Amino acid sequence: MNLLAAHFPSWLNPEIIPGLPVRWYGLMYIFAFATAYILFRRQIKERNFPMNDDEVSGLFFSTILGLLLGARLFSTLIYDTSGIYWREPWLIFWPFRNGKFTGLMGMSYHGGAIGGALGAMIYGKLKKFQFRELADMLVAGIPLGFTFGRLGNFINGELYGRVTTGPFGLIFPHARELSANSDLVRTAAAQAGITITGATVNLPRHPSQLYEALFEGIVLWGIIWLWRNRKPVKGFLISLYFIGYGIFRFAIEYFREPDSDLGYRIVLAKDSLFTTLPKDIYYAFYHPLLSFSTGQILSFMMIIAGIVWFIICSAQADRVPVRIYSNEIGQKPVIDLAEKASERNKRRKLRKKLR
Image (cartoon, rainbow, N blue to C red; front, side, top):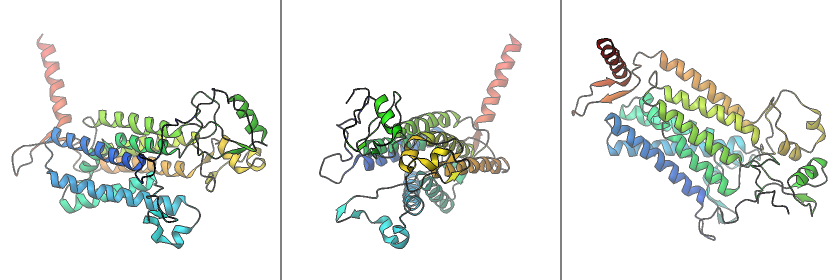
């Protein structure tokens, strides 16, 4: 084995303590929710938003519950093609397999986004909070929390990308090995400095989980956080989140290997390799520009939803982008930050003229 092929860190294990059913992936969810919670509380303090601790806790409970339900339902009923969850729906939330505790393995981001939004919407309706304001503050922290979820995927060694012989390639211990009979596989192994010793070989893959953690997490959060007090209309951050995530995820899907049982849901132009290569090898090496995975289809729908939502928000009568609430009990006078910034600019121009 040549050192050109980087191996997955041997000290990283899905279980925090080997032998105990406590996994890093579950802990990452706690970090994610805690991050979103802290950033939400900071925005409440910045704006004196009229929401007490119990209401914040209730909002997060409803949102997290909706997120987990949606993520699990999408993963089992849309991404799983075995049909077992349709035949035996009680298994969707059953955390045991073959007598062993496995937790709820398999979550869909897109399902989580829909479920979380519904949870926040229902809670806001019950407590008389405007959904656009709540959701704008929520999405200003969610992407940074999402980063931890993708780090959990990386630690699990799941959702790895396609084969690559580039500098970022990584050999995941549980990645599907490919037949050494293929010229394509042998060439890739040679380029990566891997000596083939058996009928199959494990090739380096794109660490697409880390790509997503960076762009769908840190970068997207930075963009939204900078816009939180500069948004043109109330509800804009929701649109920015949906459009930004959809674009990043759509692009990164080209580096991910699709599930072998799903493949590419839409293929607009089939090349000769699609019909001649075994499907596992084709999916591991190729993602044509005009072939689209399930994740890309859902991401495209998110982009459209973000555009439609922005149009809807722009047509609303109450479009004050950012509100600073009064500290006075029972009163909610509002300061529009956009108007406040405009007043500052007018004063600066006046001072320049006087000089």
